Length: 324
Image 1 (cartoon, rainbow, N blue to C red):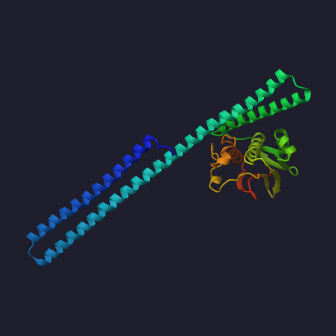
Image 2 (image 1 turned 135 degrees about the horizontal axis):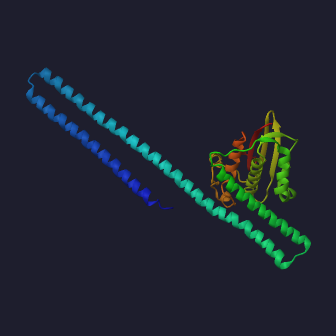
Image 3 (image 1 turned 180 degrees about the horizontal axis):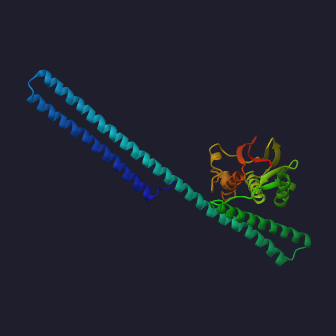
């Protein structure tokens, strides 16, 4: 178990002390008020000779004591509830900041690894070509592998820059009429030829469909969703990318057979830097920016995205765009 930060411990001690002191002073105030009323009762009992008047004044003093006690306890309770609410909101803010700090730390650790991996792989391919002078076929394969790693590195850098740009107030996309079926086929062919040939990815782009979108943003949406599906699908990958039309809506679905997303995490997976909490998904590579970028870009193009469970296992990401 991790030790709580010293500031949080000191704050907890101070809060406990304030609450206990408040309760103690409230008790003392009630007691003091009661003692004052008791003294007045004694004075009335000694100074009033008329029994009827005595009973009336004693009853008034008793009612006054009850009223004073209720007033002190009531005001004290309200103050205590406000104090507890304030502490609760402070604790919420602290937890939020602590979670963001933790996610940012994880991001910097993961981005370092993500940057080093393709650089190291590309360097190895080029060194092999330089030192061993392989045959043309092997040399071509090594060059293709190096280019693929370079493309991966370029995509990663684009995602980081895009996530940063989306935080600026003036961020917007350039909406134009785009054939999403044609673009989808081009993106899959460019980035995932190997996965399609191995049967890991199945594409059903359907007929030509026009939507209002930004080509670069749409490309980023597709690659991030497919990368996410590949990342969390384990060894036996079976990813289906389906484009369909329904009335004025164009629907793009990316279905995988991976570990899935829990009900609690479905609300969080689109948050910046967030990564799923189970060990199986944490062991996968990633920066926690992919789905955040997807959601932001989909919304910027007047679309919406939903996540649901696939059967028997896995996840379905569904994006609805407006037809042009």
